[in-house]
Image 1 (cartoon, one colour):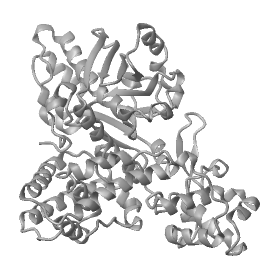
Image 2 (cartoon, one colour; image 1 turned 90 degrees about the horizontal axis):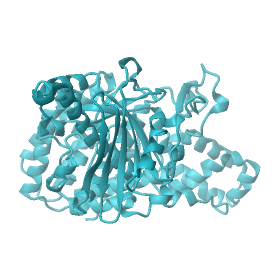
Image 3 (cartoon, helix red, strand yellow; image 1 turned 180 degrees about the horizontal axis):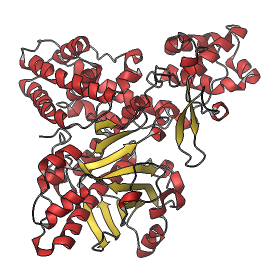
Image 4 (cartoon, one colour; image 1 turned 180 degrees about the vertical axis):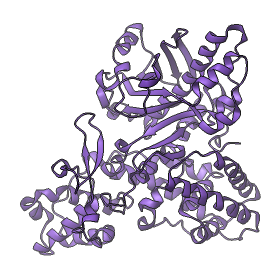
Length: 551
């Protein structure tokens, strides 16, 4: 029996997208698999940092054909200036990912610009720009304990999970960095966000080395390096706000390709006629590992607390089901169908990720389909008939056509860009004077308006006749024509409603990055962990690909 993909009407609802988990296709795991397979090595080319933690370091990732270097600048930041906010102006560390290995002149140029972040300027030799702050809860504790020759408290390491937290990782042309067009044909950077994922992975090594350096500076001969077991438990934290949410609306083809690859992988696994005892045992082992780990997922946000509670209840049910006799025909399909009846969306989506784990040969090659070279050149087909466009709208935007867009609660929010930081913001339409600054991030409303506008035309009329008279519908027409060939292009929920939770949009994207430990700080920004339990460069050759599931 052929694999069947889940329908977009199920997959693309915000509550389900907001329950997404990392999987074999996540961008961090894609990167580390490639680096290991191609035997990349990391060389620390410079570490010129004083006893106060001020200076620079260079880490070069050397591959078969090219090298990429993280240039890190460490700063002595007073506690009162440390902030998660994107509007911060100083940080504990700032970074650029350099295309190649920088010269001394390059480093001096970067020293004058990278610590300034938005206020500085990088160039075509830089692939990303980023910054990070120390964890107030953990940094001093680890330095003090190591300086005394002791290891840090294991419970604190487990609870916090990172020593530094990034507040932005910019790439793809931002602030002068190289545009993606320059590197998209390089195999190692062809996948989505591979340069950014490399930057964060190298940052994690720099942070480990920096904490060891400062402990040695404080303790001298008495100091001890961080035990590798504790180092592996530490990822890189990240604080992500509304700036990320519009991305998945503004890149419908790219987002479709991410979802399509994941859904194809799931469908291939569900179509398998049999599962071996070892394959079932692997999934059950991962469930057991997560059951122990979930107790340490930190959050105070009510919505995430409920998700974690549901997941803690779902995991034992999955384990029991796996321990029972599996059906002889299509066991993974039967298990996922059972989950759809018994488990929360959080539990269902985690299970969907887990069942892919025993099947790298079925899943991993789909990573090659997750980029997008179509969207930028997509042209509106003005010759399409009104009848054909109406049919597309009925099929793909039926949910939007059922919404009463005249109701205040349906249009309660408006997306705009702040003048100060050029970052997306979400305002209250009926309370703030922001309507004239609204960004086109409500495709459901726009599709409904387009559907109504078509009433004035005949079925056989070309779409071009509408757009000549009413060009304001051009974007909605373009999105509808994209949705006709990219079934997972559109979020099938209202992105400007009073009950919108933007954190669902953030999580959808971050799960594809490979993020774990989602900890919303409000409905508009979230803390996550990246590369927790991942191998360091010296461990890459022997590391297992299931590192994301803590042993």
